[in-house]
Length: 103
Image (cartoon, rainbow, N blue to C red; front, side, top):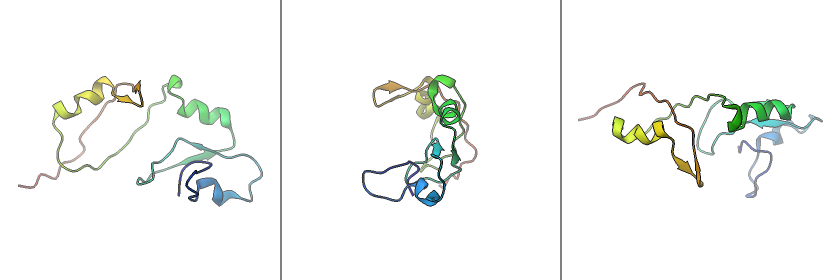
């Protein structure tokens, strides 16, 4: 399921599950295709905008499982902010929750 209201590839989107709801439904944020997590839905577009637009600076928490164990040097760019699609992200705080070091 795509966490959007439309998909140019014709895949099922989250609003397809609410065809009997007459009000417009807004996903609050998004989940990428190969991820899982909680997705909030609302009929209040203003509320959705306040939670998702960067100008409102609402903190978000992500948990990622990655291959390998990153060093502090590897993660330093995240702490400074990185460029995505020509725009710099806000600096990110991060924490390694656990590491499975195999020798």
